[in-house]
Image (cartoon, rainbow, N blue to C red; front, side):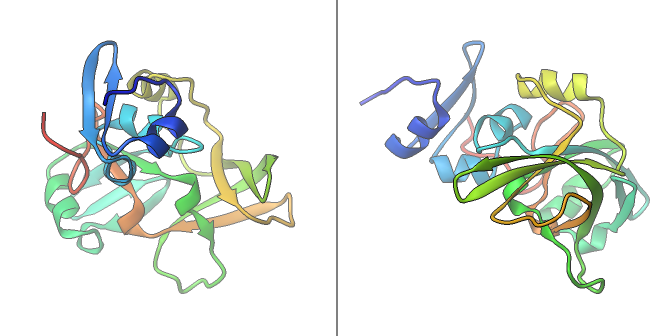
Length: 195
């Protein structure tokens, strides 16, 4: 049976396999969870999820990845990503809001973002916390074009509880970062069924 919907929640709950289309062109085919975890491109990544990923511009130089004002050694990245990123000049990094968490230990080895809370949206037992990061923002016009939707330079964090409106330091495991090339296609271990 084929069911057509524009509602991503409906698509994920009813389907064994989802076909994501953009302007009549297939972007990705696969089980909903697979597409969520391994989107083929920025459009697919932004289509699934309560809030789209936060995006940063990155640059690969020598043996490191510079993004968001921080440097990450390529050796610290998962093997397929490390190999796929080598030799690329510009990339985009997608950080899913629900993969971010508050850094409580300065010794934690994660990619970090620091920012100031702008506003909160309470959604039942969770909330979307919007914050402005000290990280360099990518060209949001370009990201919006690749994502096929309006994007903002505010970052979003999904959490159950936040007791401050002050500065946040959030981290994300390097394995949870989605990497895309300058044209918005997934790099490394991402991407679903081949078409």
